[in-house]
View (cartoon, helix red, strand yellow):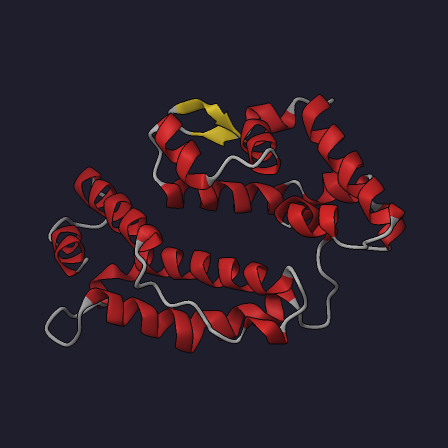
Length: 209
């Protein structure tokens, strides 16, 4: 990973060479088994822990994309630097974003926690919200979910990715099918969830959010 980072640094910011090298680097980080993952997940409510981690990881990827030149390969290996940022900074910063004084966003919860909503005693109301949101995405009455897609990959739109997610298709399978880096797919999906937050709230307003 250090070698990829150094190669990316050799290209000026904003150039095609930097973009290509960064894409390979971020995909490598995403796939790496050496990427830090906090061991104390039990202290968080079910579903919240992964939300926090995903938020922290996205912030890390954004930081690396914008500040790669701050990495000094003479001082540490790249994964050591990245894991330090993730564990000491971005994970801690993500906690109040996801928990804080706010409730868990229902649209992200029901879409990202299918196993919980289907196999735990969540109550009829929660199941109804899950089904409403899924049906809403499938029907796409405004045509907004199909239009939101990854540049250069029209088949990889939000609607298709969401349907595949709750159908049990893994990120790895989608990545291989569409030849799109895992990190690109995941980041696009998370950004889309936030973008469509108000649309999801319209049909889940009985949750009071």
